[in-house]
Length: 436
Image: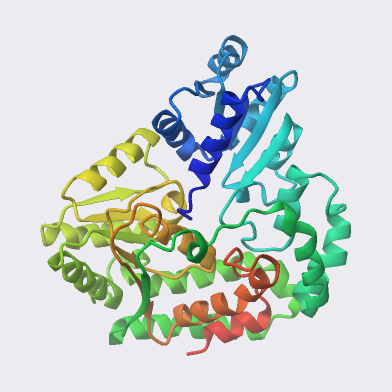
């Protein structure tokens, strides 16, 4: 979110060392893409803290854990932690810190089970989105922090999640908030970054051409007819297939050539996006362009190359080394455009040199989009950040925006912020978003 979680954590670790309070090393567990970022930030702000990266193959990691116990801070990824959990069995840590704690939102995953098995005197969970889809995700994080405080998973589901989500029980929501608030340090920009320049958000509508519109409506009508024939039980069983069809509709909104190689008409959103890029460049602004669909990047790249606009691209296939290199070069160089996968680049990047953010397509999870925007709108930003949300007019994309707004109520009740995303969609939700 760009509000200083990393720096505050480093300050705490340094304090523990300087006061002689840490009898054991600290352990930081984070997404693999952030391992080197943590190392770099500790070297930058607290060089007296000795770090140890638990990386490499199994044998290398075993040797690191066995031979380098004098390090102040051990850093590893969720993936490595779940593989190495048996290696940590005989070790005691002063503080266990999980970064982007939404990675343990599903309590039954190996990652969630692994971090909870590690012995530590103190535990911290760092996240800007403690609730992404379901209220029970909050239970999993607190089960890591303070096992038992929210009861068992089933008790929490029956006693809190179902009444609050299904019945909008505000009394229970208030009770839950009182239970967890003493253990949450929540920073919001309006409170701690009063000097941060404003962020202006603007929805930019793109009107489909005739060919693109016909293609979209044909897909939408076919899906609506299929849904109308299904019972609620059939819908629940076939929800993955329905979501796949909705994804195809969203791809048609972005650029039909993502699905149809022979599609000839230019996508309305590609044209609108290029106009925004030229407009931003004319004002000497740098641009971050986010999309959930990496398959749209080749289409955008083709246009950027045609118009001689240099760019960087970051996806889930980008190595950690290249990720860091491109980030540094974008912040210090002249390349004006950074294409970034929403999932791969929505966290762990500091790109305050950019003052224009373009969300090429809306995502069900508004929290994920806000996290991505915060790559630019964060500590260190000196300019007003303008956020453009591209929306294909009279399509599912407009309905996604509406659902985002409606589903935020749950987060406001429990966290007073933007910590939640769209919860499970009902049949009525599906039918509503398909209407045009």
